[in-house]
Length: 484
Ligand SMILES: [Zn+2]
Image 1 (cartoon, rainbow, N blue to C red):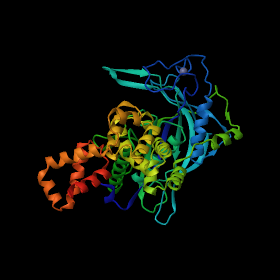
Image 2: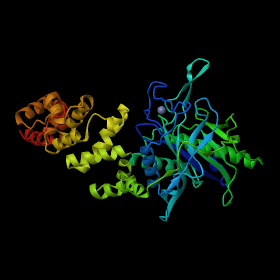
Image 3: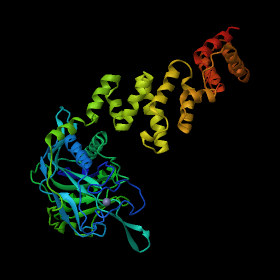
Image 4: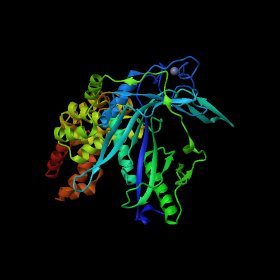
């Protein structure tokens, strides 16, 4: 069953994205917000909800939440209010979550996710950006037959970004998420790692006859662990709803869980839609009243965003739009490229190396670009050595591989490994003669005028020299040998 088989229906999607803010400490106490500490070590009376403990708002969390709101062109509310969202769950010691409800931090923003053929921008509205704290974590696989609770995450600062139901396909939802992730990463708001849980996506999806203005009954789809899982879950849930509607049934408003292995959504057993959170203003925190002067300063301090960076890089380094798009996919990669381009004074070479060798090595090592052992200045030095003919292009790849292994600078590796270019005639002639001796048939044909063999023979000399021979000189010397 595929969505394409039902052209009369269109998909309507709105997304709720929870993002962990990149603060050192939690939202309302001084505990570390780091991921990966031993269970229940980052806790204190406030986040354990001990009687009498009072929350104090983390200013850095507010600043990062504001950055996100402003980067998404939201209107910031001078006064917003924290509220208690009441529900009972084992990993929620207070019995409520501090969130924002009817007076959120910011509202009415938008994200341009592309453009139509005629140049009209495709915009997705942002309903609201509000601050809240995370709950703890129930761990089901640590002790057989028992559930353990880790409260390190309880009280970690989050923002929830709620979109309007403006997306009409899984691909549009994917484009929105990728762009949102890019913007949050560039603006330094969050690590936005789905693996570490610092970005989580819930999707509201409904189906309606194309052209209808009323929204159909929606379901909420959860449990997706990647953007591609979101896209597959949306297509699958949409197909399920369309089949239901076409057979005369109705869609029930409920929570659906994505089962990636089976490739289908199934109804959650918990009746989440029946929750009544009994929101009321948090009595332990005063309303958040912002100094709009400070808000302005936070906005002006937002680092360059992806769209602006793409445009600048196209002009500054004469990149194609496609290359700029690829380079700016991650903030780290585009910063790395710019540093290499500046250090080498050769943006073309920097582009080739960053998109080729560097990307491959980073992926192979499974590290982030800022953890990659070859720093941009060192790669810049290697590219200068290539341009100044100190190492050949082939040898440079070997130098680079050693730099990845050892983290040593280019010149040191080239010297230690004897990979500097050999332009000395005597050494080159020796290699050439060896190659001619080892390949007598080719040598004879070459000497009798079959000049197209020159490339093959040069290649063999390069191989024999382990890439160190200067190919220009090898060519020249080889032609001279042919005339002997
Ligand atoms: Zn704490």
